[in-house]
Image (cartoon, rainbow, N blue to C red):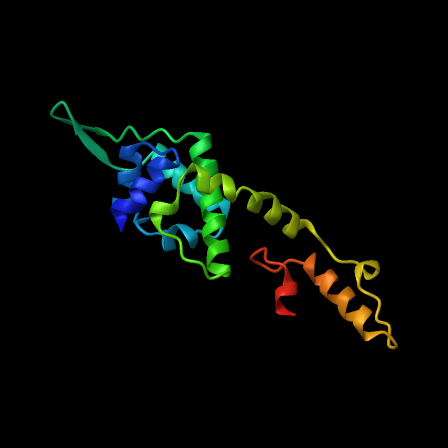
Length: 163
């Protein structure tokens, strides 16, 4: 599985040595581990570890400080989208294989970035709540479903799926 994840990371813009270090030394060798990074800050921390890892390497017969790896902003952005997409696929109960993850897959999931931003900023006021009409339950039901289509849960899914 680590080799497949490594290949996916390379397709998203990490250099091969950085992908190897990520899977072998940092323990991010499965899609579950990438999905379970809770925040974008976790991914920023991962990139900092890649850019300046602890330890030494042997170079020309001498031990020198590890020089680190280059991590482009595009690769970091792709990793953020991958994390959101993996969480989304868990929510909708659709499996993802490392072979599925490439730049086209990332482009198809870019909508999640704006969706999560919108979901985290949206607050519901008293005026936003649907009006309940006791004599027209069909209209009330439609209003409630419409209302919950625009209310998002913790993972960014609309709460209308509960209804």
